[in-house]
Length: 403
Image (cartoon, rainbow, N blue to C red; front, side):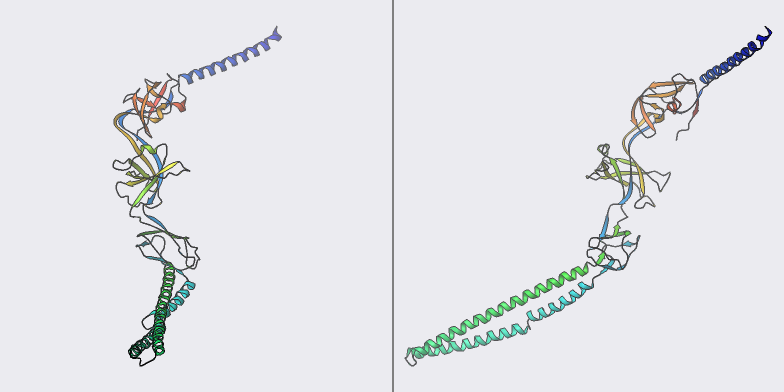
C-alpha cells in the first residue's frame, strides 16, 4: 500500500496542474471576449456632399511650337538658350550653306548678263533692230523706184521686164523686213524668258539661303534647345521648342467612363486643383476645353482646365491633381467613407458595435451622403472591418478629429 501512494500523488498533482492551466486559459478567453475592443469613431455631420472625378495631368502652354530645320546643313550660330524670351520673327540660329551661297552668286552673275542682253541697251537686240531699220529703208527706196517704173511703163518708156524686176525687188525686201522683224521679236522673247528663268532660279536659291535663318514663329519662351553650334542637322530635325507661357492651362487625362459627366462651354465644370510644387494649397479652376480626339491607348480624353485666378510660380511641366466636381449638394448627412461596409455601416451605440443598413447618395473622396440609415450626431466606427467586429461586440471608442 505504501508503495502505491507515491504514484497516486504524482498523478493527482498532474491533474491538478492541468486543471489550473485549463481554468487560466478559459478565464483568459472569457476576459478577451468581455474586454471592449478599441475602435476609432467619427461623428456623422451635416455638410456639403461633393461627387468628383479624379484626374492627373501637367501644366502646359496653349501655344507651343517645335521649330525645325528647313535645310540639311551645319549650325553656324546659336543665338538663344533655354529660358530666353523671344519675339515673333526673332532669329534663333543660322545654318551655314556655302554650296548654296556659291550657287546664288553664280546665278546672280548670269542674271545680270541676261538682264543686260534683254534690256534696252542689249547689243544683240540693237544689231537686229538696226538690220530691220536698214531693210525697211531699202524697202522704202525700192517702192519709190517701183512707183517711178510703173509710171514710165504706162507710157511704154521702159520695158515690161524692168517693171517686173522692180516689183520682185519690193516683194523680196518686204519679205526680208518681215523676217528680220520676226527674228527681233523672237530674240526679245528668248532673252526675256532666259532672264525670267534665271531670276526664278536666283529667287529660289535666295529663298533656300533664307531658310538657313531659323526664326521663332511666335513670341514666348525657349523651353528646349536641341542643337549646338557646329552640329549638322537634317531637314525637319527639331532644333527648338518655343511656347507662350503667358497663357498656361492644366491638361488632364479623364477616363472615357467619366468624360460624359464633364462639361465645357457656357456652364463649365468646376475643378479643385492641387500641385506637387505647392503642397497644402488648393486652387480653383474651370474646364476650358475638352479635346475631341481621345488617347486610344489610355482610353482617356484630354481636358484643359484654366485656373480661376493666376497662380504665382506656376511653370510648364508641373504635375497637377484635380477633382472635377460633377455633383454638389448642401446641408446633407455625411458619413465617413471608412465606416461603410458594403451597403451597411458600423456605429458605436451605448458601448456596443452596431451594423445598420444605409442608403448612400453621393460618394466623395472622404464622405458619403446618407439618405437613410444614419443621422447627424451618430458615432461611426471607422475601423470596424479591420477589427473584424461582430454586431453587439463591446467597444471602447476613441474619437478622431475630423479634418
